Image (cartoon, rainbow, N blue to C red; front, side, top):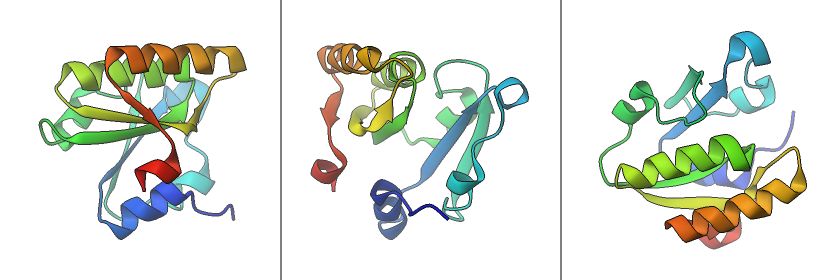
Length: 129
């Protein structure tokens, strides 16, 4: 079994809710079992077909004007759309630079620069802890 990511361990320890989404599981597959098996008992795992994870189901789970920490893949697509939607909804958004990735490595830096310019705090896992 893969080691538990430190961000996830911290969230469990501080009883911070974890919301995880899968992008169109019917076509692209489920979230890998190594991640799902390490989620705390109180978590939301939601399938979506939009690029943003702020679906109505996820929005209901988030309290208004809270801080959210975002990690994920395809920084230039799903992470970007989620961050922009969360900012528009009034959340304080932290994007963990060491917790995001893209298939094309050039896209990651471009997306992080854009998110910083849009008002997200781009930081590292160690800094957030």
